[in-house]
Image 1 (cartoon, rainbow, N blue to C red):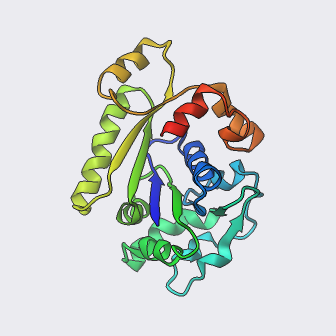
Image 2: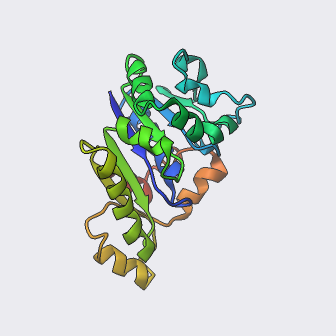
Length: 233
């Protein structure tokens, strides 16, 4: 089993869209039974896959010692892909986890799900808190989408320092340049500077259409440049 987390301290960088797309590709193109685990209280991951919002506020209960995570998992219309949706209960989760004091509760839950899923893709909230600590301890790979701005040059070292301080055996970190527009000089400078060599996800209407269509990019733009870049990622 592999646990892949999509994480950024910045909101609005395409994190959820990327997590949804990766989970869909893992399940439908690679044939791995895949769970998309949404830890963001906004619940965007399930919504982008066409699922209704959760009426209950019980998603955070998956972290209880006696929880049954399988009871909270919802299948999607895509073969091999299921979602553990977020809801309003996730807003109080950082305080709950701090009170519990068990930094590997998420890792243990993921391990318990390994019999049913070969891949777990985690959509993380944009914050450094108790939730991110759980994610850093559980992930096999951390994908960090960052926009082409000078602030991103500061954000990545912050994330790396936070992980190194508490997780000496930290997962590999893969930064991704998101929302890239080659027409803008600043974007080109960033791409040629501190973000040189990073995978690039361009700013494109196809990505915006994922929210309008509530479907992964590969289901409606299979031959486009954006789809090709995501496929290589």
